[in-house]
Length: 246
Image (cartoon, rainbow, N blue to C red; front, side, top):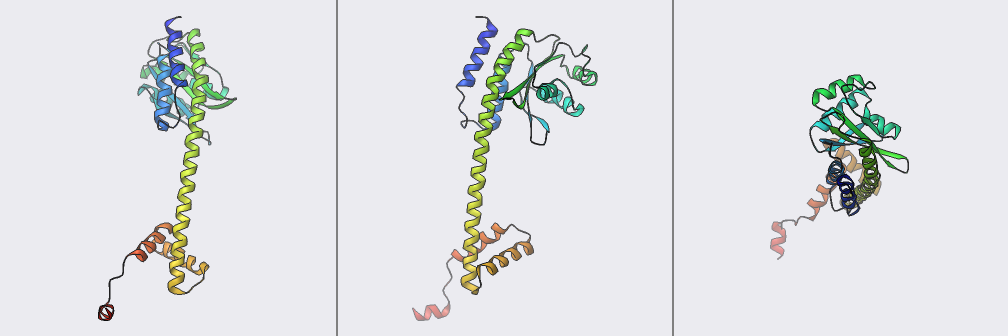
């Protein structure tokens, strides 16, 4: 087994052993970038590009400041090896940014940053592109056809890990938002009950009173309700009349 094959196998084993939920989203993405880089000896910098629902691309994580700087050149141009890999769902290799003709402006600027070659691979799950992983070399021809095969094998597994991580953290966020919404509703209902008991008004009127207070004070409805509930729970100091009765 060659050193590069062993490096790929080691990276894939690490990915296979990755447990979603044990790391933060950023830590999970950074692990993917670092493991991919370790399998490609020519990579001096690695960036992981994600694309949101509106089509905006951004570099989520990187192993060296070189990666987001060169990525941003492509985002500014609206094209480049990274963008092309994502949009066309294909591997894009640039042997030399000094002689590459597909993106002359980007390539010239990339050379200014010291990125002389690159290998970009789409992160695909069932033909759905999640983004792309980009490897940059500081020498020309830093990546070969063998690197394409190694990178492709890694990208397949990395995309699965990424999809699982996104699904997990998305579900967790929705759960937390739902839990927060339920707590907000509960405290608002408590506040309405307090107003109804004190003022003898209907539930709708009590809610309108809370809304007006929120608008008047320019504060969130839940904050107004929480404050009212907290005040209602505070012990009332005994009056002189109470003391005389005791």
